Every structure is written in structure tokens, then in C-alpha cells.
Image 1 (cartoon, one colour):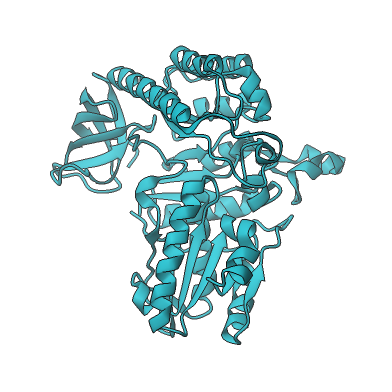
Image 2 (cartoon, rainbow, N blue to C red):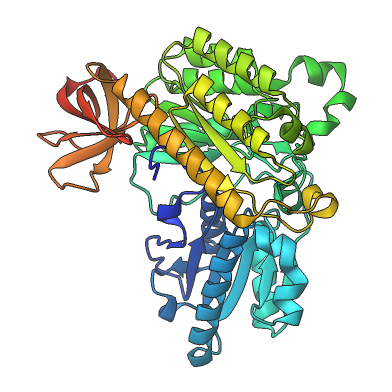
Length: 485
């Protein structure tokens, strides 16, 4: 529906199996599948790196695997059900390959450890998001015939010292993880429980990874976190421990806007994006840094979840509708051609027709460039599940969602048409899905642009004049390489 940005949950890549170059000494084969947000795909690269040092080489074929790992997501019930089906499939293969071991990584591991291991006995090991460095020991346990589990959430693990092995890469764009966990206790969200407290990664290790990606020829990086704006480095430790930091630590602390500027200056020819932002943590300092550097994309993903103040309060979103509108107004003033996209949840408990109209009117006021819209799915363990009844009927949720999607499609088309006649810089990521004669890439605003291939190649920055559009894609003619190559 919207294939525009580093989707919060990119449906097209769910369950992708990843492959690395075969290691000469690799005696055992690893098959790993990833589900969920970009953070999980990034974590799978960390896991592949840890296991390649243990002599595992990856395989794209489930039937050849000695170890099968699935990196899981708990954000919606549908995500968990998909993964359940995969686990059944793995177990069917296991009947013919009794030595094959199956492990669950990531957010479901944290949430369903006893269920998966002891009650249903469908996996051999369960490894939470902060325990990947323990994998060699856990695999040893499993080899010795015992179940292995480590779902301890850490206060310091950031994997800053592990150089991820880039998987399934187009060689052009890459993710760089800067924070882990989340402290915002939105009542609908399971992330704080599955990924733990918020902590930031040492800026030096981030810069090293970015410089390394530049050396390898990557052209665009996305700084990644459950909540990137609240990045805060003061020598290590939890975000919420900052108030106990020494005067010196406070004076030399690195905020998200500082980090963004450091990365922009370190690699002026690399395009920088970031995801995901939270309105309550988004500072105008960070917005000004985006405006100041041409290599930081003019695109901010700013989840709102609802347009109703009453619902925002029930969701424990620490911003009002008015504060959110003010923030968007400021963003557009500081960066006039900035695109803004949304996340929206419809049918949250107690949502009335009036609350729903508030969401539609917020959308009318902002006219988002694109968005990710979902019907509310109750997650066990969250405050909403404990304290509220999921009382909006499914057919009401579906109708409201349909209305929100239809309005967003209208706005996306309106915003696409505003790009007509402009000349934009596009980074070529690969062939267009529709035609092998066209390249596909994105401009700074994260719009997908397609244009004739001519003699350009993947990884080129090309100036393209926009001549036509659909609601989801800009169509243009290449004018030549930009000065960014």
C-alpha cells in the first residue's frame, strides 16, 4: 500500500532468510529468518556476526541447516501467528533432521519463554534481544542435550563492539543501531517489556561503523532506535540514570542532535536518515540540524497514534494534539520541504466516533505524505491489556481503518502532485518492481522515484525531473549525475 519508507514493519521483507559468504572453516550451517521492525533485521546481522566467529556459515536453504533461528516480533498478534506457523514448518523439517536445533530470538522470546520451551516444546533455545553474546554458550548447552534460555534484559548491552555482518544488502543503504529499548510506557505497546530499558550506544562506535560503511561504498545510512530522538550518551548507563550523572558527565553528554551533526560532518557525501521519532522527545535542535546539513534527509517519521486528546491520554502519549500540531508547524517552518509521515492506531479501547473524527481532522490539518495505519491489537502484559477492555467491535475498527487509509491515500496523492516539475536528487537502490527498464530510488523526502535506466548504475546520485506521479510513486526523467557522487 505505502512502499515509501523504511517501514516500521516492512511487509515485503518479513521472513526473509539471510545469507553470507560461505566460511571456509564453517562446518555448521545457520538458517536465520527475521520478522518485525528494522531493529530486528539489524539485530540478525549482529547474530550472524557472532555466530560466524563460532564457525557457522549461513544457508538460504532450511533443509541444509544445523541451526535454525527466527528473530521474532510481538508488536501485533498477526506477527506472532505468522511466526507460530513458521515454527510448525521448522519442526516438520526437524523430524527428518533430528540433530537440527531451533531457536527463537527477539521479542517473542522475552514474552513467551516458558510457553515455547517447556509447555509446547517446539524450540530448543530462547534468546532475548540483549543476550545474543551468550549464543555460543547457549548453543553448547543445546548440543549437550539441554534446553537453553537467556532472556535477561540488560541495562548496558548495546552491541556497540560488534561489527554487524550486512545481510541481504543492496550495498547502498544500511541500518546503524544507536539506541536499544524504550522508556516511554505507551499503554498499547509491548516494546518496553520485550526490549527493556532505554540505553544509548557510544557515539565513537557509531562513527566508526558509519565510516566503515562509507569505506565499503554504502551511500545512505539510517540511524535506528525504538525511539531515536531520546539518544543520550553520558559515558554509558541507562537514559533514566542521567539525572544522577556527574556535572562533568552532564557537561560533555551527547544528545541526538549532537550525534546527528557528528555523523553528518564525518561523511558529507553519505545520506542520513533516522527512525523512529517520538513527538515528546523530538527537539527543535535536532530539526535545526536536519535543516543545516544537506546530507540529512528532509524527512521525519512522527508517529501520532490518535488525533483525540482523550485517547492520547489513555495511551499515555506524553503529548497533546495541540503540542503535536505545534511541533509539525515548527518542523515545516524550519525545513520548508520536509515530509512528515505518521503511525496511527484506530479502535483503541473506549474510542468513540467523535475520537475517530478527531483523528481524521488531524490528518486533514497536516496532510501527511504517507503513513502506517493499524487497527488496535491488544498485547498481553501491556497496561492497556491489564486495565482496559478491548471494547471497540472488530467491524467498527475495520471501518475506521478503511476511512483513515482512504484519507491518507488522498493526501499522499496530493503531496506527490506537489513534487511535479521539481528536480530532485535520487539515490538509485535497484530496478523498479514494475519494469526492468527503469531504476528505483528515493529522494531526500523519502518519495519513491522511478526513471529510465539509461547509463546510470546502482548507488549513483542522479538529478531527476519529476514529470508524473501516482499516489505512491514519482515518475521522472534523469538529467545527469548530481555533484554528490
